[in-house]
Image 1 (cartoon, rainbow, N blue to C red):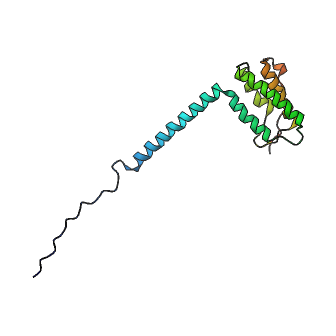
Image 2: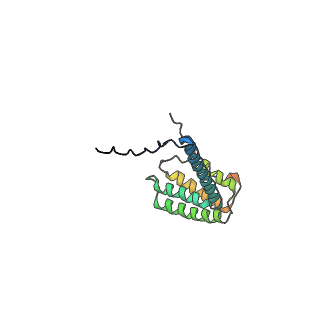
Image 3: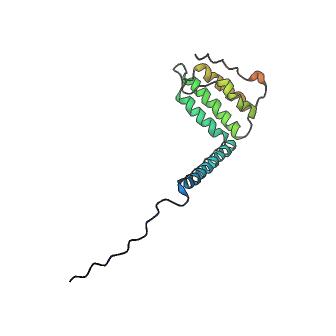
Length: 150
């Protein structure tokens, strides 16, 4: 007679669900991501507050990429010269902060909108006056109101 095969004991069942559940991992992961995002925002704020010319460099590169056809090479050259003076004054902290807030009111640029010759002239004038550090509102170029959108 033959001997019966010996049975091997089965291992205990494996519990596949983690003890904390997926919510715990998700909350920890999202919390860490939120902390990283907040730290990046704070770092960007500190960087731009210490080097505001960087923000204006980004703006000027967008302006130069969107000149309208009526802007002449002479207009572009004058704008670049005025911006160079403004950037130097900004780096040397000779530009009034109130003046910087007026930039949007003076220029009124919409995203993707061509920069007309009139806006180039106003920007050139703004950069020259801001580089001088003038606080006289009479020297601030006036903005042309935007047309109403339907």
